Structures are given as structure tokens and as C-alpha cells.
Amino acid sequence: MRFAGSANLFFCSDMEKLSVGIQKSGRLSEKSLDLLKESGIVLANGSRKLLSSSQNFPLKAVFLRDDDIPQYVYDSVTDIGIVGENEVLEKGHDLEIVERLGFARCRMSIAIPRDIEYKGAESLDGKKIATSYPNILGTFLAENHIDAEIHVISGSVEIAPGIGLADAIFDIVSTGSTLVSNGLKEVEVILESEAVLVAKAGLSPSKQEILDKLLFRTRAVRKSRDNKYILLNAPNDKLDEIIGVIPGMKSPTVMPLAEEGWSSVHSVLNENEFWEIIDRLRDLGAQGILVIPIEKMIT
Ligand code: ATP
Ligand code: ZN
Image 1 (tube, rainbow, N blue to C red):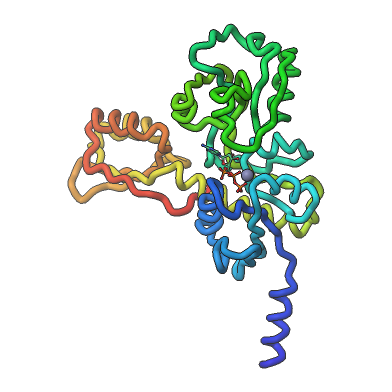
Image 2 (spheres, helix red, strand yellow; image 1 turned 135 degrees about the vertical axis):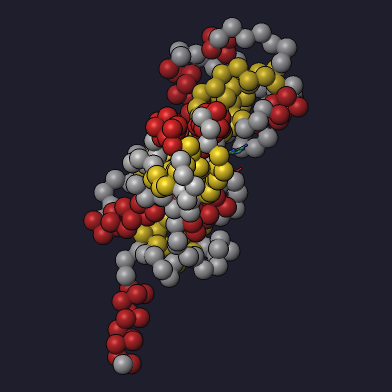
């Protein structure tokens, strides 16, 4: 009995694990951990330590600065990483974007002082542009044959024009209010970014298998977030039209109600088309509409 127990323990601790680089503290951290948690992966200690190994899934998380994640994945220090696409492009390593994760959305734009006229990218010719992302900006300028000077600064880029350090900036924009409060206007969107899961090509077959299992779970979680379960009562004479409005995963479940002439219809709706469909269902005479969140969705 004791022997079997210790052999099992040895197997668990020695088992190959997939390592994932996650931002230690910042805009990506919480959502990255939530995605793992909702995928049923329990990590001890959260992000308080450098490393946290899951006891119920062959994965260990390494908590890093987001800027370092592309390099660490490229150097195989971690097998995969969750990081902003902007950082992946800026660092320029040959990494594969395995999955787009839909959070930490932002855009990267060029902004100039509000009172300066902008007539297209050529207005930037001969200008000095401050940024923390010289590679993405450099690529844009080269593609558009613009001869501008790139001035690299590491933080508070948006104050550069106000203090006479630059004529324009290239930076992350989420709402645009920081630009407005610094007297700037957005003139050119160069990149739309979101969190992505990256890997270096050539993972070992056993690690690739773990990654596939992880993706199967994260996709089910993300799909469930985008969809709702819907139940409603439909008059039988409108059933075909109502079913036509909500086709469901395969086709809706229809069950007779105890009350003659009525049926219960169950299906799945996408969040994006939700309100429009509800309105059409009500117009067709559907009643008692219930909408329920879905925990996991496997198609
Ligand atoms: P670290 O200490 O890990 O280097 P950081 O300060 O560089 O953190 P955060 O501000 O946490 O990074 O941003 C991480 C990522 O979140 C960005 O690279 C970008 O992909 C995304 N992001 C989304 N919206 C914004 C925003 N409004 N400002 C900055 N980053 C944003
Ligand atoms: Zn950073």
C-alpha cells in the first residue's frame, strides 16, 4: 500500500508539464488567471510566487513582466505565453499565435497636437515621433515611405508633444481620454491588439498534447461566455416561424406543454444577436422567455 502510494507520488511530480508565461501584475493578469480557473485548472498561490504548479492539470504558470514573455517563449524558458499581441509584434520573434483570447483589447495609434492639420501619413514626414514601440512604428513608416525620426521613451509618451520632446506620439489607446487631456488627437490607427496565446513552433508531442487539451477547455469556456441558453413557450401555430428565428446548435429542442396548443422550445443564442432575436420572438407570440448563462459549451 505504502509502495503504491509513493510510486504514484513520484509519477505526479515527475510528470511532464506545459509551462505558461503569465503577466505577474497588470492588465492581463486577472483575465489570464480567470481563463485557466474557468478551464478547471487549479493553481496554488495565485500569482504571488514566481512559479505555480497545478495539481489537477499538467501545467505550471510562470509569472513575468509582460514585455519579457515573447522572449521567454522564444528562448523556450516557457512553452507558451499569454501576452498582448502588441508586445509580440514589437519584439518581433518568430512565434506562433495559437489563439486570440479576446481580452485586453486596445489599439495602437499615432496622435498629434489637436490644432495641427493632418492630411494623411505624409504629414508625418520630417517629424519626430515619441513611442515605446519603435519596431511597430518603424514598420508602419517604412511601408508608407515616411521619413520620420523615432524617439524612444519608456513611459508617459503622451506628454512628449506638450513638453516639446516630439511632434507626435505612437502609443496604446483604449478610450482616448488620455489623448484628449493632453491636447492630442488620434490620426492613424496602426494596430488593433488583444491578448493572445503564443507558442514557439516545434513543441514536443507530449507538450503539444497538453496544449491541445488546454485549448479544448479554453475554447469551451470562451464559447460559453458568448452564448446563452434560452427557454420559451410558443403557440404551436407559430412554432415553425419561431424555430426559424433560433436555429440553435443543431436544432432546437421542442417539447409539448401540458396546456394544449403550446410547446416549450430550448435553444442556444449568441450574445451578439441576442436582443434582436428576443424582439422577433416576442413579435411571433413567444411567452415566458427565460435566458440562462451557460457554464461550458462543447460543440
Ligand atoms: P509590466 O509591469 O508587466 O511590464 P505594463 O505596465 O507594461 O506591465 P500593462 O499596462 O499591464 O503593462 O498592459 C499590458 C497589456 O495590456 C498591454 O501590452 C496591452 O496589450 C494591453 N492593454 C489593453 N488596454 C490597455 C491600455 N489602456 N493601456 C495599456 N495597455 C493596455
Ligand atoms: Zn510591460
